[in-house]
Amino acid sequence: MGVEAQLAVTEFTKYLRSARARSENTVRAYATDIENYLQANHITKISDATITLPSMRLWLGQQAERGLTRATLARKTASLRTFCEWATTRTLLSANPALRLGTPKPNSRLPGTYTPSQIEKFLQIAAEEAATPPGKRDLACLELLYASGIRVGELTGLDLNDVDQTALTVRVFGKGAKERIVPYGRSANRALTNYLQIRPQLVSPRSPSALFLANRGGRLGERDVRRTVTCIAALAGLPDIGPHGLRHSAATHLLEGGADLRAVQELLGHASLQTTQRYTHVDAARLAAVFNVAHPRA
Image 1: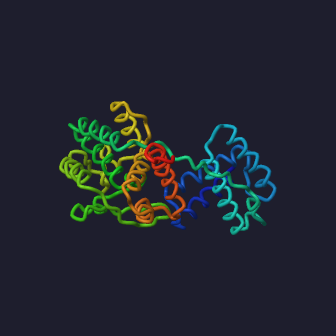
Image 2 (image 1 turned 90 degrees about the horizontal axis):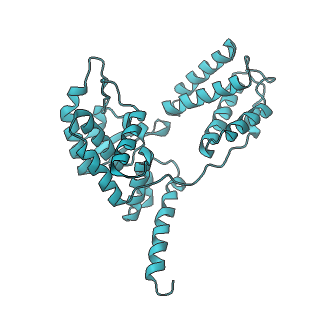
Image 3 (image 1 turned 180 degrees about the vertical axis):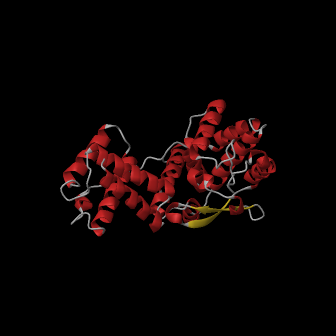
């Protein structure tokens, strides 16, 4: 990738950040997608001759052959569309070649979830591992993830002043920099209180105001949380469903307990009710199983 193409990626990244319509994780993903596309096609200059519909389709096809998920392919398609739209407004392209680029349909299959009894076992093991400051931090992370249903990126993005322990709520900045207030329960609050008492032991001279600090004093990262979930799942003898699985477990259990669908939508920060409705399929399957066993005419 030539200097001119690299400069375009840099300016595109600045544009995404200035628009404030996407999270930092999405900004980085879009920029990486475009860099990979340009490098794969040996593009050194952004022009109508180099950025073409066939080259984008070929690149996406190559990505699909690598076994990437539909969701990842859909994001890469969105990256190309957004870049081409930006390049057209900057007159780097005379027309947007990505307008006819099809989007792969995301897979509607939900990731794995734990049953309530499995959640109890998972968090019990985490509590047993909470003898050290990092262990207390990890327990607070896991309790809060399940109690609130927030995304792992939202969890690691929390600052100290985002938590209201009196109201039992956290202020979260989700996708599109949208702010929402999310409640959590007493069990998570106990874990948070215990962690906050030892948090000073993790603070370094350069520590940010992050709620959760890593072992060396920096902000705890998403990979750190994923490793913790994997470790505790292994100790508990449970499948590794990742942090996102804890979020899905929370949503499923809320709906099974009779929570209103729109309330769950607000809690999870979904822009569309249709996204939240995927969880009703899980509950419907459970109800169908009960029906088949209990109804005399089943």
